[in-house]
Length: 227
Image (cartoon, rainbow, N blue to C red; front, side):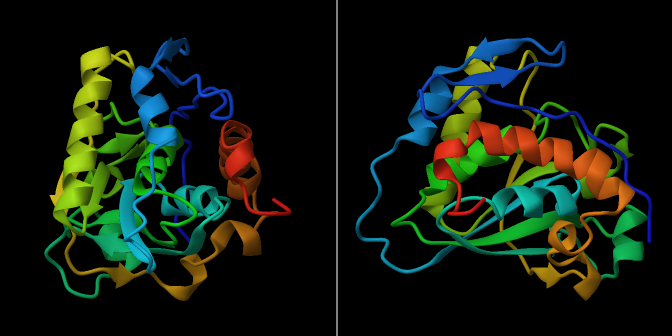
């Protein structure tokens, strides 16, 4: 097992009040009108089937645990995307030589949660102003990245990224990469559902749990029953 380090946690104000804030590197909250647009969009009634979204936001153990909380998210898989090596192992990806990012592939029901809302959750879950790192996790494998599956996802990701930068919402430029989705390589079995199955481990207690607690407070009105 490879050691994990904590990254800078980015939190938003309550979505239920539809006032949105982003936390900059100094720890101060900055009001962001952009997040208001992202958290209450009109859902596209034509998107009746399940959809996929794939995000890289540092440690995929953390990202998986966060997105699993959201109503409308049916499945979250940890894996690798964006590199040049087929069927990479975790050890290879951690070396930073494969070009892959640690990612979470999310299967969701657009009748219950929109892609806009998933983007809001993505930018809440990590610090998108850090290039090729999250906190002490350093390397291209920890980069902030949105892998889009169609032009509508690309346009929304680029639109909101521009608005966040225009507002200086995070106190620094959002450097999130936006790229077409490629082959998804599912991570080893022990990475799947990691927090739920290893909640007593020190990394889960001291890194994932505080992130998850903050995430759940932000998305209190969007959580699955019993969460």
